[in-house]
Image (tube, rainbow, N blue to C red):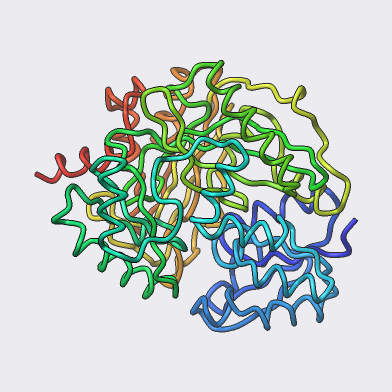
Length: 448
C-alpha cells in the first residue's frame, strides 16, 4: 500500500483519481496552481500544495515543484492522469531516481511509444497490423516522393513526436510534396522540438478504433475491448462509444487478442490504449497512448472494471485483479466531452458557472469537478466534464443520453451541450454510420 498518492493533475481527472484512492483507503495529495486553489479535488484531498502561478509551465509542468511537494507531504507515488506530464519519459525517470513510484508504465515504454516512428516499428515487430508507409524518418524530397508513389497517393506526412492533431499534412500528388514536406518539418520542429517526420498511406474514410489494454509488468496482458472515437473535430475526439457499432464479435476478439499478446510480450505495466484506423474490415496501427485516456469511463461502464483501481494495484506490485476470461461486455456506453466553448464557433468560454445541475438516474454518470459558483479559468483545456451513459442496447443508450443531455444545465458560460443535443438526434449518428471526417463535414454544412 502506498503511503500517499500525489495527483499531478487538475479538473475532472484529478477528482476521478482521488475518488479511486479514497475507496482503496490511500491518502491523497492535491497539487494546484493559484488559479485552481478552489477546485473540488483540492477541497477533498487529505493535503494540498500550491505549486505555482496559473501558467502550466510554472505549475503542472514544473517537475521540481511537484517533487518538492512529494518531499514535503511524504507522498511516495504520483498519478499523472492524462495530459501534462503523463507521457513524459524524463519525468518518469526522475521519479525513479527519487524512489517515487510513477503510476504508469516504465520510462522506457513511454519513450518507445512516444516516438511515432519507433512505435510503428515496435508494433510491427509485435504483430500489430500497421499502415503502409516509410520505415523511418524522411528528410529528402526524392525519398518522400518515391515512398508516396510506392504506397500510392494520397499520403499523410506526420511529425514523429506529434500529437493532438498537430504536425500533419495530407499530400495528393508529387507537386504538393515539396511544400508539404518542408512545412510539416518546420511545424514539427516548432511544436515538439523535433522536426522528424514520416509518411503513411492516407485512408479516405476510416473509423478511429482504439483498444484498451492492461499489463502487469510481468508478461501478462489483457484487453478490455474497443472504443469507437470516430466523431472528431480537428483530430480531437468529441464523442466516444463502446463497443464500436462497426465491429463484429469476431473482429473484436481478433484485434483484442493481438493487442493483449503484444502488451504481455512487451512486459508493459499498467493501462494503455492502442489506437487504429479501421477501414474495409482492416485495422491499421497509428499510435499507443501510455496513460489513462479521457474516454476510459465508457470501458468501465460496460466491463464494470475500475481502471484507476487497476492502475494503482499494478503500481503497488499486486497485479491485476482480473484475467482475460473475467472480462465481460455488458450493454453499450457513450461519452460526451462537455467543453466550455461556444457550440457553434468553438470559441473558449471561461468564466463563472452561475448554476450547475448535472443529470442523474439509472445508467448516467457525470465526471466533473465543477459546481455552481466555480470559475472556469482561461489557462487550461476547456473540458469541464464528461457525460457517460450506459444502456442494455445502443438504442436504449441513445434514448437515455438524449434525456440526460436535456437535463444537463450549465449557466453563466457557453458549453458544447447544444452540439450533443443535435448529434444524438442525427440519423447517421443513430445508425452508427460515420467516419473520422463526418463531424467536420456536418459542422461545415451547418454553417453554410
